[in-house]
Image (cartoon, rainbow over all chains, first blue to last red; front, side, top):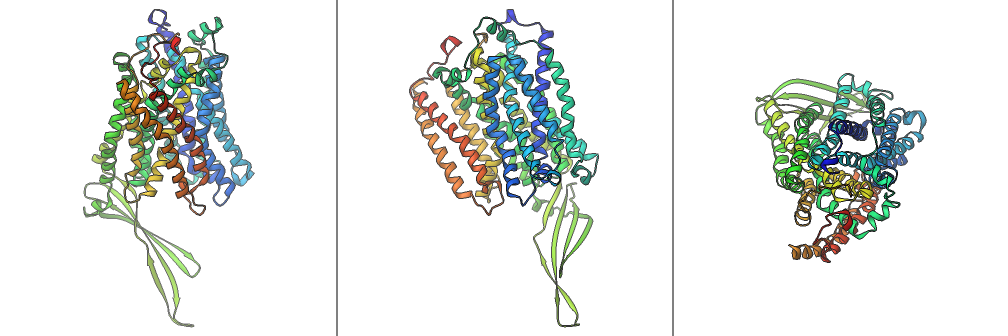
Length: 517
Length: 81
């Protein structure tokens, strides 16, 4: 649509709100499952049951990697044939319904294997729906937008993935902070609330979306009988279009995916598992950083309308490849327990727990320390005391086997806390650089009649597969080379660098003024 | 630039099989029925290899197109697609 035929601002605002709220809810729905994975696994996928473990693996991995791209194909095809509005309304209903139902499934103890099977089926529906949602929302907004504001308007859609993560983190933290761990993890406890909340959000969003009209460009195409009869064939068997799908994937979206997941997921997992930061501090670091960085999606979307999309995205990838090593080194260095112990920490509390097992007992001593500069940590020492007897009726003695102390619940001081927020903020700003302009970039790459299908597949392969694998490949590398704690970064750095090279050589920076063709 | 695009096509063409090789090697090394970590789990490797193999083939096709000079000129409107 060119500037002269653009919809009035009021309509565009409604279009943006209707699309963004729904997309944000879909991301929220998708993330809460991942964030509550530990609780979910104890409720539905008990340890020691091989079938349940297999279903758990499928629920976590297959939903993100296989079903999302498959959803992109299924719903992309529908969107190009029957229209954007009804397709992304359908994805919203599927996502909201399946999320709500996950919160209602009785646990394994109540209904046995039916529980993990139901949860797996609902999780797969979630993945399918997410695969169909994004392309529809981005296409819908872009097809309403004037050429000179396409990047800015679609950047509102781009805030939704991060805001969905933010809301998911916030809701879970809110519920968790208002009850004990026992209440939260109970069979019908607090962990179910975030799933139930979803239904209210989805009903509101469906109401808003129902009131919207079909995209004017798609309506015109449909009226003229020019819609595609086989979008999959036209997208992927037409050489000229397929080469653009490949270019979108390898020159833009795969780099975007790894930057997105490293900045917002790997960072959090690294702070909690490698640095040993306590739950509340690591989550609030993420929340602050995301809150301060989110406006940059709009800034870079707006900027991309002026200077083009290509170099903003590629600069984000390049900076990620260059800065990640230094940022994660700083995380490790500032939480290094050997340095903290040299600071003469003061013991502020000590708890002793003894549990008796047969002829021996286990003593766990938890010592809480505070360093001179205000950092805190807990040192846990576990001793196994085994009873030995010197003869019938004789005195009994105890032998002790002490394990290496474990350091948990690290709390950094205020200065380091602010520094960590800043470092995560930098990484999320890089996310905004790669992600802010990408919806407009993808929309402009493909023709209207096969746009939904053509842009959805590379997006979900790039974001879901390349990005979603960041934690797994990180784990794979750190397990293979345990002596290098930062080796997990090789994957995102390598993919971002490769994508930067391909993108800078093969992509052009031209903004397509006319997306009506 | 056009020449560089073509030459790099060879690199992308070779990178595809290399990715498949490293994935298979990773699977053989790490799959362990007695292991408890995700990387010891054969199901995960099957999923990853299943999804990455078509992507690696896609990278080879991308390299082939680049080598043939298909990216020398990018379409400027839908008529060219």
